[in-house]
Length: 198
Ligand code: GTP
Ligand code: MG
Image (cartoon, rainbow, N blue to C red; front, side):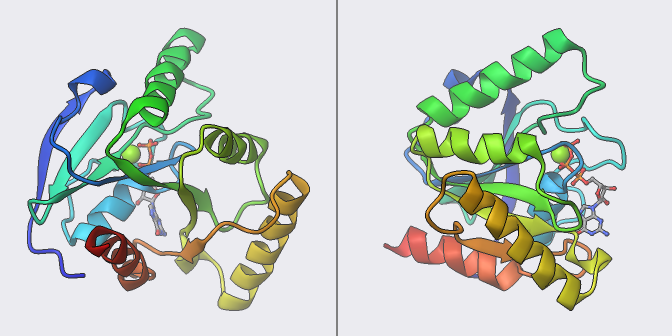
C-alpha cells in the first residue's frame, strides 16, 4: 500500500475523546523505548510525525494519525517504565486498557518487542491480556539493524518457545522491522492494506 498522506489529528488521555469517525485503526503498543513512535514515522515516511526520544517515556498520550484520509495509526505510551511514578503509571494503564477494551474502531494491535532481548515478563503478560480481551494483535520485532540475521532468527525461535510455554497454541503473526533501515515496511503496510480492502 502506498502512503499518500499522513497527518496528526489529536492527542488525549480519554478514549471517549478519540476521533469518532468509523475508520479502521491500528495501534502500536509495547515497552517504553521499544520504537513505537519511530515505527510510525518509518511507515509514513515522515521524520517527525510522531515524537521520538532516546529517553523512555516520551509518548504519554493516545495519538491519532490519519493516513490517506481513510484510516488511522495510533501511537500509545509505553508500559513498564519504572521511573514513572506509580500513580502516573496507574493512569497510563487505565487509559491504555480502556482504549483496548472499548475502542470499536481498533482493527489490530501491534505489540512491539525489541528483537535483541530475551522475552520479558511484562510483554508476555500484555500478550495474554490482549488475548483475554479478544483484541486481534500481531507481534512486531524492532531494531533488527542492531543484530545479524542469524541471531535474529534464533531470538525469534526462542521467543516463540516462550509464547507457547505461556499458553498459546501457536506463535502469533509476526514481523521483523528496523525503523533505521525501513525493514518490514512493505510487509506491514501490505498487511494493513489487505485488511482495509476486505
Ligand atoms: P516511548 O514513547 O518512550 O514509549 O518510546 P517509543 O517506543 O515510542 O520509542 P521511540 O520511537 O521514541 O524510540 C526510542 C529510541 O530507540 C530512539 O532513540 C530511537 O531512535 C531508537 N530506535 C527506534 N527504532 C529503532 C530502530 O529500528 N533501530 C535503531 N537502531 N534504533 C531505533
Ligand atoms: Mg513513543
